[in-house]
Length: 266
Image 1 (cartoon, rainbow, N blue to C red):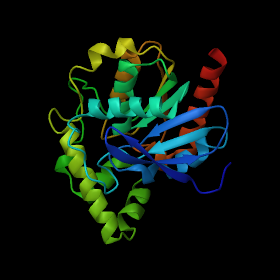
Image 2: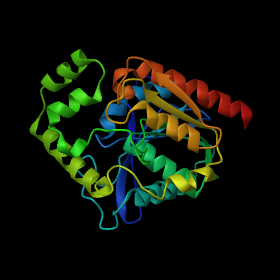
Image 3: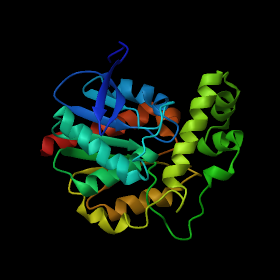
């Protein structure tokens, strides 16, 4: 595994500068899209995936303390932004991995243009609605409640809730929530028009879900797998909504096995 720190470069796209963390090397390229909590939660996953691949982790416009661009109105804007990033970087046969909000972005990208993609992985992805399945409204929960909702292991939740945080970290977290609300407030956490176009996704697709996800219950993972043609569903035991934190080794293994099989089919 590559234990060296990632390098960070700045890429200018659609009038703004965005930072991209890069780790690993090789012919395989993984584009990793973070969730509403920002890119830091994907550090362990990025390191694990970079042992056999070049793994790129960009920071979404408006996240990580950056100002939201005037053109950022919805998740589709971020999908188009990252399709431009792929073009600008000259990336080919990209293995696209999206977590939480990043999964929604990744699905929107694959619906629009799959030509540059080798595979798609959706982890605890927002973006669709499943009728009569209760979910947690994250905007109505306190920070402490939301941490408890996110993880199956309450010992882990308590440890994270008690971890010291700087004023800068708190400010970034507040701004991340503000931008997330701007993108997902109404309707909550999904695009009612996305599901009817999921049949356009023409690359091998993996859906990964925590068996004890309370924020988006496993029925959501089943719905994604049922609506994306040929999608494979992997359920992680003893895991909530954030497998990248709660089960990073198991998540990385599932992604690596899937991308390896997708490469063999290419």
